[in-house]
Image 1: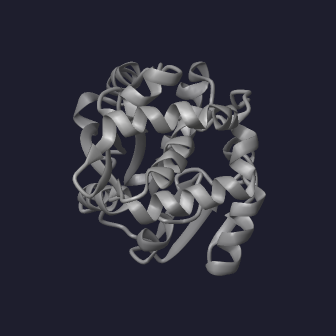
Image 2: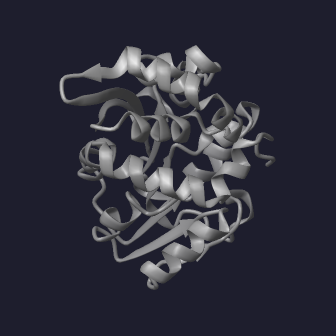
Length: 252
């Protein structure tokens, strides 16, 4: 399965990306809000033996969720992120490779998380990718997929400088058709990004835009944020996200 080509992959591996990621995590409510929503899904998972995080990044979700399971497996294609996680969490079983290349046993995970990863994969390959994720679930397990919503201020930011053409609705319909509507849940996540610094907000916007080429348009992006995100005492950018959860039924 080939990932989508593009300069954003370069940004994924450099020190600037790590700095922006840490800044983003410290100035927003995303991970806390996402953890609440994921906790609601996990309440329906009876077994808590094994957890798989696909594209764990810096581990901001992986680490708190890992405490709910006996063992945690991570697939992280970025070598620097994988090395960071292996040092911080030596008990994690970390595979520094693409998901399709990871040696994972079928039907062996109670919970599989894929948060903000599918952007890097050609949409035509999503059904194959999701089918493998689902195949890794134990009976009664849950798969959680998180993506940026096509509405809200962050979506408007995308449309102002590029485009947001992720077929979220198509993915939802495909999940319903393939796995049954009774096994699919949709939840929304509202993330507030707040900072006193316009420069910091510009850095976080560059992080969200993914593509390293947008660094050349920093002044233009800063001007947009000044107009659209100024509030009393600082700057606020609202991000809307969608959580799609798929459950595997227990055998009757």
